[in-house]
Image (tube, one colour):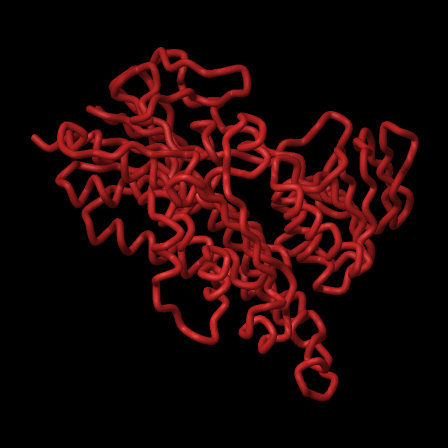
Length: 453
């Protein structure tokens, strides 16, 4: 009899696990209460990047004079933008459904929960389904964190999921939170022509990121008119007619037409029946797991945001694949564990930001000797041709062996270029391997070989 594998939550982790396990011969059932592809397709990753792509076109239009064109004008068609986002999300949803259907995966649209360690209940529009499972995967994702002092109304006070796009384009948006999500929204609405104020609770945007990277983004924000309130922690939002006032703990305030909360997320671990199945949950609501993504109950796995690991769709997808292989016994053969410290990440601001592997500050903190090389985009012919020489490539390597340890990129195409450094870090390649690669000219990638010299 085929392994009965039940997955609750069809985000990137759940979809990948279902598809891969089905290809390996498992009998797979997926339970999803919202949309196939999960919040990444419906509310978060894909809609935000679709908006950013539209904003990038507007930014390019505004830079057209510097590229030998007469001044062009670009305005936002809010309804057209809304249709575009919905169309992209629907296309991805349809693709996911078609893939799973072609593989014989059973899909139940509804809420799933554990009834016992080997029993799963799915409550759907056509009734309640009880399923027996040899293995279960929990991948229910997360949702925006809303503090007690904030009361989102979907009108003037928004969560991130109410801003793809918002009911109306903000005249002046106050963004609360300067992490990855916050700075992407700053860039997004700035490119659409909104005034933006960013409340930064610490002394730099992107806390935890390379200081030079953060400084480059801050400089670009300031040059484009973004107001930064550093060292200010929001503690209240007041509605005053058609305006909002965000109050901070140091007495300062920010007034705008809209406020947007970008202060993290909380896992969707409630109502999953974790207690009855004996699955442990930490204080943050996440389900701890080992390097095989197993919870404390061996046949119950966890992937995606619920696992408390890096909240990246790429990481969730990799977890889903590894879980499917473990469920089907492939870990008994050659099997590589996920190394979260080597996961590449990107921030889709303008300029783009991406990094992977060891960070410069972390190396200094542990006393590790490193070689740091940095090349500005301004020396790259393709960046000059494209009219956008902002940014740099920074490469970290072992001075004794030349092995690539990590890197950061600020500039156009960073999210694509970081893949080269990520491969070098994962495969333990040397800087000489990058230097000796015969790259295209002119291309932004040449900055990688220049940094590796």
